[in-house]
Image (cartoon, rainbow, N blue to C red; front, side, top):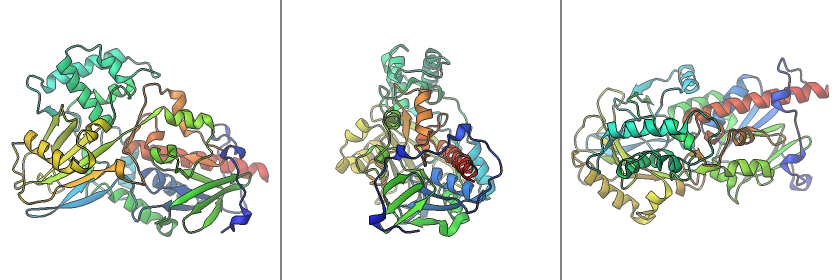
Length: 448
């Protein structure tokens, strides 16, 4: 239903309350009309929420500002000497523990391709005398120092200062800052349990490109996804939420906000009326900044993973669907200072030169253009994935997931166990969908 502007009054998001999902009774919903739910964002989090709610019988509309689904999951191609090569300009690796993502891949008939290299293990290419085994030992020491406390409120840098040898510690620091896309002084020490765990486990990508998954999910709910629809404002009152896009305004019984972290914290956010407890929790997250560079090669190489400590980036070559290693070098640079060291205008040229120096073992294709992707410059993302800040706690994560009235939240930043990862995005979407279903069920049954 479209509302004229005169019929919409301004309300704080905290004015309208549904029963707390954690305390509501689950069960069969008795309702005269199908509840309507808007999902803002067609990335993995938003689509995970939308597809689950559609399956449960809700009337769902997904608003996506881009002309494609997937958000920061973006599969593309690059011209190589022998034709087009697949690349991932956003989220890339499927890792151990991605149970819900694997479940969705099975559901939509998609396959995984083992890369033949390990995301977790990276050879140091620019510091002599520091081996992978050295970094593994230092990482294990750091993990021991962190301990098992689930509410560590200190930075990764403070733990690194206790590890020992400066040169070795800087290599471990680089590993952390690249993977977290943020400085070690900003990131919670709990991240060391994952990032510093450098075990040679395999890693995978989705056959046909990671974007095949959001594409399949969107196709399953077809015309419920409205592309090119940028949400400008949410207005909540005791009976629902008005969602205003750049084309019209519609009312819904509930809304799931599945937008990137930076868009929620910015002055241009459509969700400006969040209460202090929500804003404070979001402020305890760190916004990551990262870039990816893809460079064609003349010949198909072996698999590899090599890191630059000084420039805070790593490079890798990996298997394709047919089992061969693609003739393209993939590069990832993490943390704002690393990107700023080159400057935006010089990033592509300067970084490519540093990559060639680091990977002199490879034959780069002459005259071929590299593809640069910088998510911090993307107006709809304004950053890469997130990480828990040094002063973040489990209470903050609960507040981030907690709804504000009829507005619920999902995103890679909203999962405590897989923060910043594709699995975290999917889990947060499923969690938000369950909360919406429980809350609307309890609200409807109570009103009958």
